[in-house]
Image 1 (cartoon, rainbow, N blue to C red):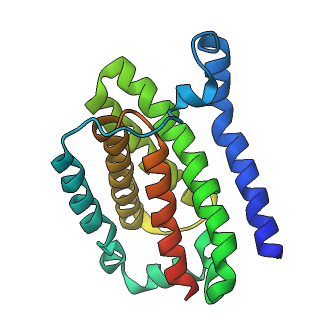
Image 2: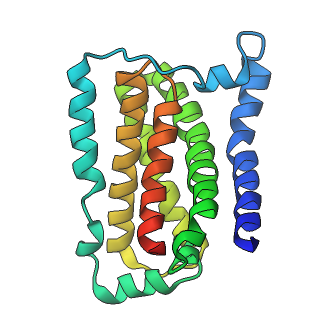
Amino acid sequence: MELIISNISTSVINLIVFSLIPFLWWFFRHRKETGFFRWLGFIRPHLRSKWWGLIVFAVVYYFFYNFDFTRLVDPDTLAYIESSSAVSANAFAGLGAAAIVPALIENFIANGVAEEILYRGFLCKRLCGKLGTVVGILLQAVLFGLMHNILYIIAGLNVGLWYHTLTFLFTGMGALLLGWLNEKIFNGSILPSILLHGAGNFISTMLVAF
């Protein structure tokens, strides 16, 4: 129960922090045009590409998600990461079924919804509108990758340049695929990326828990 309460608190804080800038931007510049959630992309997904485009994406994402980049990390660094309390997933290590509910809360709300609001709902759409869809998707992916590097630094994790590089490439590629899914395959809805982001994180957490 303590872990559930902790994850609810984390989710609320993340939602507030990640939504603050988008909300202020919308409030001062777009509130007379459309509602906040619709502006972010909380709309029904509608397939805009050919059906085979979705299949190609699914295949690419499957191989990306199943690629274990930790095989490229030296054992000492990996052991350090897996034992650090600063890595949120480690809180679920060995909990088994008791991790399911708190992991659902953290992975789908604190990570899935909150991060998608800022990066795919706000930054990606603003950048795509200013610079074009492809450039916008690429830039938000770079920013998303850098965010994870910054979080490691803030947490005081001494993981080295190589691990930072792998983290940037892996999380940046994930953001690239999620941005492409929303903007090029669907109709700008961020619901597909929320579901995929949350599900991916949840599966990873369950591997740690069990």
